[in-house]
Length: 558
Image 1 (tube, rainbow, N blue to C red):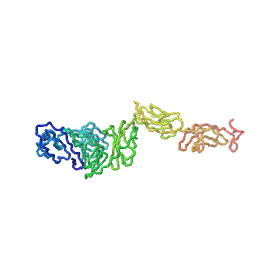
Image 2: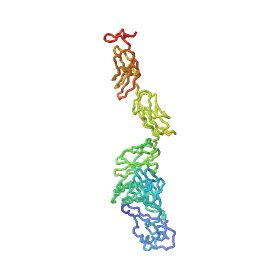
Image 3: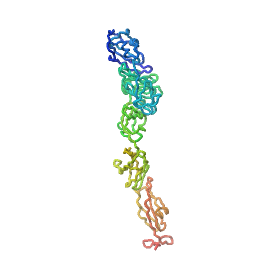
Image 4: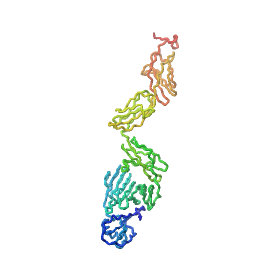
């Protein structure tokens, strides 16, 4: 027989016959004539306990053994339509209202807490704490709470939820239990246990009604406006207003009791391509959304049962991101949310986070810096947890075959010699004093370019000083001429677009010349080493020109 819960339209589980093992020892009472059980429903809004009599049973004896008030044996006869309460037949089907059974209170147990979770009005909860019948539980925006009820049902209360433990009792007379909750706000994930003794199983009430199940995994959510109750069935069957919703489907009931058509739940996503190792404080998983998926719900826990959920998020993006997780081993649980808001089946993925000690932050050279010369100075910030640092420099072969691998660096800097012109990448890691090495930091690049070649000796003409050197297409050049090697007494400074220059003779004596290269990408190379030029004194004619004698200038210095 199926009955409806008041105000909901959700069908409850039919009553189940209790075996004759519940009966006491036989008595000498004579067998009674068989009387048919009345069709009258038992009091209350639940399916009753069905009991089949055996030889020796009497209503008085059954009431003394099973009921909280043994004096209700006459009411029991009336409920079952027995014309003569003193005579019942062997094999008689009796229906006993559940709330008549003898019971004793039992507590639920907290088995997982993360974030803000409270036992109202006392305050914070902790693992192992007992929760008595009638108490309420609440989670904050970052809270997750897992509770095991007396019948073995496991409740996972998610963020911003409130739930009352409305019933938690043992029924010693029949060897069973009764568990029930009221979800006033938020979301709860349920793995229902078994009440035993053929009793109806776990029940969860919402502002719209009741869901009653046995041995089923499902989720229940009360909408933020408290106008709708939604349910997603993962295992077994739940009846919504007499309409069975089987595993793999979701349905909803509105404030007027209308039931939405059952919708299929999305399958578990494929997480096989996700990495098993994370090495940054911000954990990232790329997970593109396929067609038909509006968003993802993702959770992180330390245990396979997800009793302690450390993170719970929904995102419409293509990346899952989790912050503030300590180093350790975790499970990621992901399910798809379809355009109607139904959350599908779960997929789990194990990963390890090893992000500490963090790599030091490089300071110089800047990313992509262009350097000149064979010596490179590298520097980075000091890390508080680091006892030493390790530095690697790689070329085209990458870090599988580094060109430099310097360990046990005690200071935040190093000078590296002997690098040929080319492109390089470098990276760092911190090492704790005990030897625990953190992950490598992100690699940064730099380039070494060869210095410009020293120009050949200048050619001194009658009226000018000529220089020429090798250059590359697109390069520009700076040339300076001075009377001292420090170039504080400048004579000439020119910028050129070709590797040659002719300067007027500045007079006689010793001069110094140097040049540098400007590459097309804006890189300005270093100055070449200063070179000296000796311009001899000469005898000049009336026009100021040096007088030549044969192949040379007539020097005025003897």
